[in-house]
Image 1 (cartoon, rainbow, N blue to C red):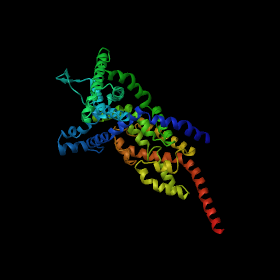
Image 2: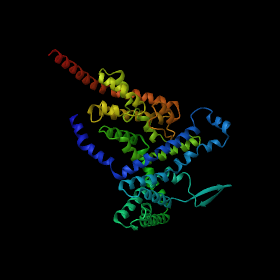
Image 3: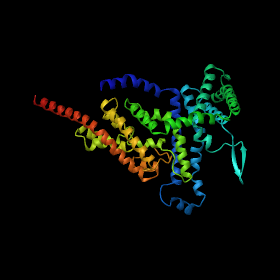
Image 4: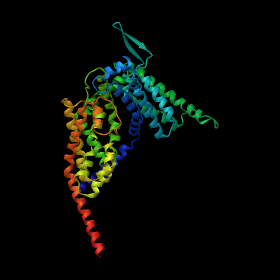
Length: 444
């Protein structure tokens, strides 16, 4: 146990802390987090459109007319379906902030560069004949979830170029007395011109290849292999929950670190599920970010099960009180009282079930969905504080999702119980010793 703790404290923790603070990963993570409220808003309207209740679609048509279904989904169109534009702006802004340079100019250059790299045309079918329409920014496609990887790369490259010009002083410097807003605008002129020219050249070069656009190149060579090999299979899911739990074991928020890396590969998968549901088909993908939301029952490590064990099985007064105090936060997936109060962080006994519990229910949930015993995630994003069981129902749009989370809680309780029993026995002995010592002191 001492060797495990020594490794975690002296080897793993410094590496993980450095990774969490890496400038570019932090910008990607914070960029996605900044946009997350808008995805939740879009998801709420998806739920309204496709609420999992018999006769809901017919009721909408009866009350509001046949066009209502497409009208109510418009908020989804302006969030999900053009999210690459938001993401490139958000990441550019966050990275520029870390360099302490003009964030707004970086964001605008990021958007302009992304559009320069993206097809500005679409095709429409009229009476069986396909027509190409130029000068059109489409809703969905490369401007939606499929373009996220290019959006990330564009944001990082553009901001790095912008920062280089600013730090090297290759800018137009205005005389003193010129308003700061005007001065900042002109300082972006030279780097902006070079950046736009560079992106235009990249577009021209890719037009000479079979790929035509950088999006198709990145999607086929990076995004699709990553989705199949890492993001959208059971081994990748196990690796994800293992990494998040291991990071939490040393006090780092593993979700923000790992999700920031994996989210670009998950988003297209959940968008494909949404598209399938809109088309009246079953969701094709099991692994989405919402699949992992169902795993973290009570927070990272699925620690709501620990709360129940402390409340109803622990003999230690301290543990029982900790369980009671942790119940309300745990029901909203906030686990800090357990992680730092039990504690689980840097506790070799607690680290083992912290990792085993999520891994076990990841396997159970994946297989249950693969065998169609439980409905798959619809792709709808709900607030992470949504209480378990309700959460499972909303994510899958089916009662089976709620039942699965109940089963998950029982599984995690079984895994944690032997370890809780060890810690509880030790805590009870310490409490009895304190009572004994206090009694001896009173006698004296």
